[in-house]
Structure formats: structure tokens, C-alpha cells
Length: 290
View 1 (cartoon, rainbow, N blue to C red):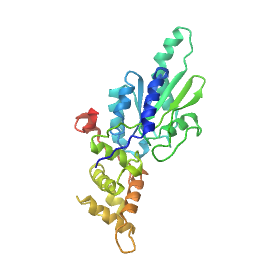
View 2: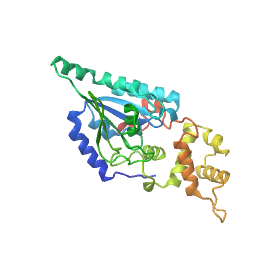
View 3: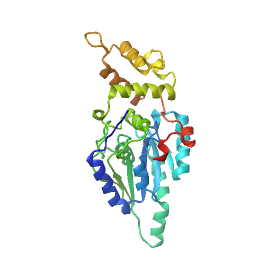
View 4: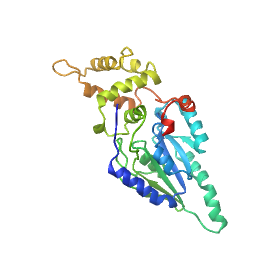
């Protein structure tokens, strides 16, 4: 399944971030805890090389807790700092403490010269990983525009948290060529791509395959179907069970696909992580080299 989506505002935002890098003390790179490797933009990671970074595994309330622990440890080894988080459930104290810890060396250098340093924090990531929700959680009010779809934030915006802490919200940034295809499919399944650029029915078939591998039994438990090796047949069973049929008795595959994708994204099939950390450790995923 080939997927491409790199609108002009993303290229513009990347250039704007490059212009702001001298102002940035800390970067919080948000990834989706359900696919922590595929949702880490290699372009963004390269762009922020040398900066003090925190990998924030957001939406951890929807992911497998054991896998989240492993992924958090993995990113701590790679980047020095990582934190599991839920912008909808967790209090911001742990994240604020991590930001202050990451900024401490810079603040101390300025203090030694008798200067008070304002810590400026970039919050970045691919579309729909919850960047604006994270910022709103940190400041305790809805200042950054949120939406459960990609492309809501279109430009950079500063949000002041205190006299010494400012946050920079950024649009979701993808990279021009989404590879390997399996990573692009995971990104699409999580809702980080606009529905107009993917075939949702084909994506639903691929999601069934992903779920059979990542969480055997989850589809059967949710929809009361048999999880066979033929994803299309499983999908047809789901549509029939739910009554997604047209007047002529044909399957309404578009409606079925939308429901399956929405229910997975909303956590109704359980807490599921699509990527195993041991695959990344072994370097067998292919996305590691991005």
C-alpha cells in the first residue's frame, strides 16, 4: 500500500523551525505510544540533533503497558530522556520536571554569568500525535487548537507557560517519502494522515493483519468473528455482524472501514501497540534506518 502526503505547509513549517532553532533550549518530540518507531519522524530527529530532547510517548493510555515500558527504556538509551504520557489523563508535573531537568545545564550556564534564561521548548511530532493537547495540558487551559484529525495546527505559535518558560507549538511534520510501506500503514491506521490520501477499505484490511500479529484475539473479541488469515474475509464478517449492508445486500465496505478504524483509534479493541520493541532492538523493522 503506497501512501504519500507532504503538503506545502509542512515544508514551510520545517523551514520555520530551522529558523527558530537558536532560540530552542529543549525539544519535546511526541510519538504515538502505539507505534513509537513509525511515528518518530527521521527528518525531525535529524533536524534536532544536538538539542536536548525528550521523546514523549503520548497516548500511552491506549497502548500496551508492557510494550510502553520497553519503548520508554529504548528511547532513554537512544536520546537520554523519554517519558510515557497521556495528554488526556496524566497530570503535567512529571513532564514539567523532565523539561526543567533537560534545560538545567543551559539555565545554570546563564546563571553563572548572572543572566536569567527563558527556557523555550519546541513541541513537535507527526500529525495527530497530540502536540496541542500536550501543550494545553501543560498550561492548564485550551490555548492551542486541538482536533482529532491531522493538519489542525498549520503554523508555529508561541505559548507562554510562565515568566521563564515558553512553548512553541508546531504543525505535524511528516517526511517527503513515507517508507517503508509498513510504517506508512501504521501511521495511517493511527489517524495521522488525512483520509483523502488513503484507501480506507484497503487500510482496514491491513489493520486486521496488523492486529492479528500485535494483539491476537482482539478483533474476534470485539466483533464476534473468526480471525482467519484472510483479512478481507474477516472484514466482511465484521460488516455482516454490524449490519453494514446496502439495500441490495452488498457489504458497505466504506462504512465498515470507517467504524473499524475509528474503534481501533479510540481504544475500543483494547490497549494495543502495533510495534514490538524487541523488533527495533534487533534492527529488523526497517524503519530504524530512516
